[in-house]
Image 1 (cartoon, rainbow, N blue to C red):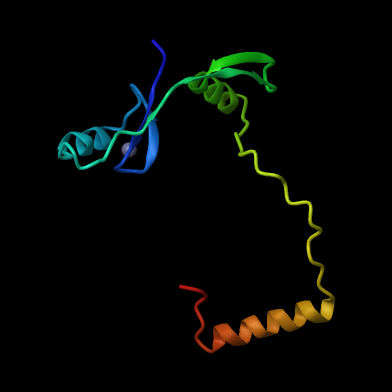
Image 2 (cartoon, helix red, strand yellow):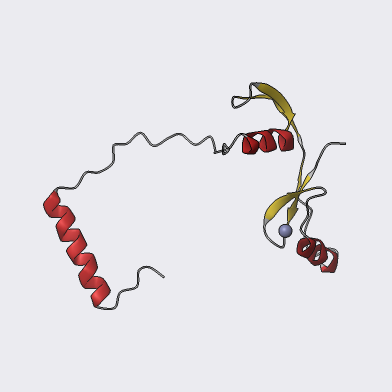
Length: 113
Ligand SMILES: [Zn+2]
């Protein structure tokens, strides 16, 4: 049987079947039926995908994620990398910004709330 992930409304992540933390199971059992519009079900199947860390193909999402994690790697999104050059500040601009920040903190500023 393939592992199946189910969205946990208690901690807002997907837990795999057989890997639910006790507190989440209890919270789920105590949840009134119908309080969630519909369960979020994430199927485990996917198009075959090559794991570049070990050279094996996977059609199980959970097996793939586990193999990537076991290889010490992290799955990231498919966002387009930001190719924009980072803004460079002159030493004078940098000194001015640091001085301004110090003055703001000394005046009681605690950053955006
Ligand atoms: Zn949970």
